[in-house]
Length: 185
Ligand SMILES: Cc1cc2nc3c(=O)[nH]c(=O)nc-3n(C[C@H](O)[C@H](O)[C@H](O)COP(=O)(O)O)c2cc1C
Image (cartoon, rainbow, N blue to C red; front, side, top):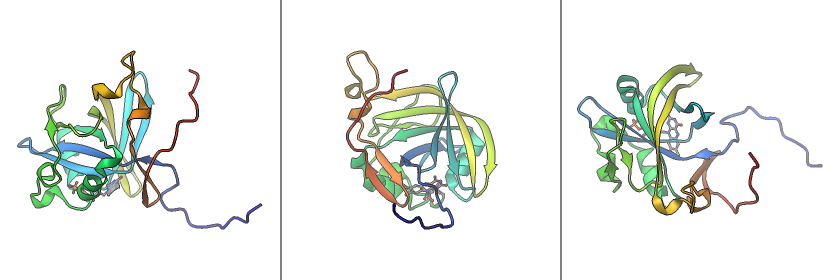
């Protein structure tokens, strides 16, 4: 057996998507933030997701004021855009859609747009807010999910094997490997 090293824990090991979250200001100008802290909280009735955002982020301010956001799941091919949206602030007047070549597409139920280049998008309304250590947790009720039509199977179900999502693990970006099996519900 390999000896284990004991260390102070920093960002636990759970892999998460490197997601793109869109919010808007009072003039409806959208802003994008890259987030690794994105969680499934309630998975059916209701469907709730959590996003953990530091208070210093411009997006924190926008989501707190407007109470809405969209979660967009980038494919691995958008790595450059994810790095870019996570390394500059909308507070400095930057239009991240224009700067990183992303396309805003109107949502149906919320004001922040979804990102057309991301194959899965969630329209969310804030239903909870909690201080959680060095981040704040916004809980979003998912009002609608969008999926690219070429990413669903013959029954109209989302086919995750076609998504090639960008995964954030520790301090690195990864893609997922091959599918090993299916969960029996
Ligand atoms: C892959 C990645 C993951 C990130 N995860 C988070 C996160 O979960 N929470 C957070 O507050 N900031 C996170 N950041 C940092 C923000 O994206 C970054 O500070 C961004 O510039 C803030 O933009 P804004 O000021 O326009 O909102 C992450 C950055 C990257 C590149």
